[in-house]
Length: 231
Ligand code: AR6
Image (cartoon, rainbow, N blue to C red; front, side, top):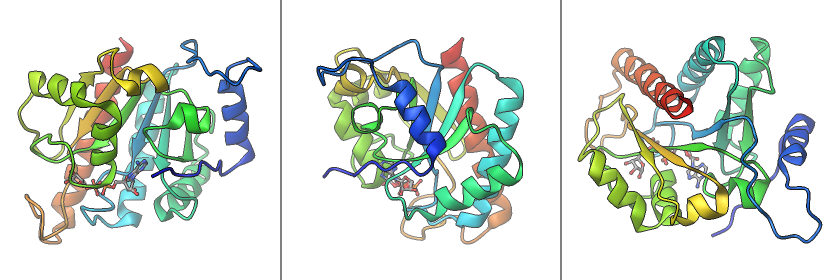
């Protein structure tokens, strides 16, 4: 299934155009000279049913914290549809806080096709994983494991067998992986967020005090993981 890529602002069109390779043949080559970029989905807000408003505040808070420490990198929040509630709420709150839109913006597209589908080159992408670090299960996890091919599962398993809520695991993508070859992604960072869905493991039973704490930890772990890739 192919998602249509639609940029949601002129700023983003500029970003995209700047990132498009300068060739007229239509053959795309991945440019590696771009500013290091992490694309991430909104952790926990779909299958794990975490409240969108609360998640938005945490995303903006953690993005701000990261950008205060790191100058030569950017963060991009991605979702599949331009009707995405999380994208519009986060975008509005980031604007209220005057967060630099060169360093943080929202982007509509499939996180596994950001370069070929949207002209956005990302060094690393985040995965909203499950605790077993298993492929499948739907959502962004299924999409990333599918797009990366079996080498992602192998590389993941070499590093860890499971993940606890709030933690992240950085996995270098083998150069044979289509996600590396076609999209220029060199790292996948698995993150396990808090779960508010009674049908899934580690259900927090509507405990948002704990839930917000775990979501903050999840974004800290993710952004620290990205920092380790930059070094
Ligand atoms: N590209 C960009 N964003 C996406 C894509 C995609 N291909 N697919 C989904 N999203 P979810 P969670 C957005 O449910 O709530 C899995 O089965 C989606 O619209 O993937 O943390 C795992 O195995 C939403 O905004 O993650 C876990 O068991 C965001 O990604 C569980 O679901 C996260 O949605 C994790 O649930």
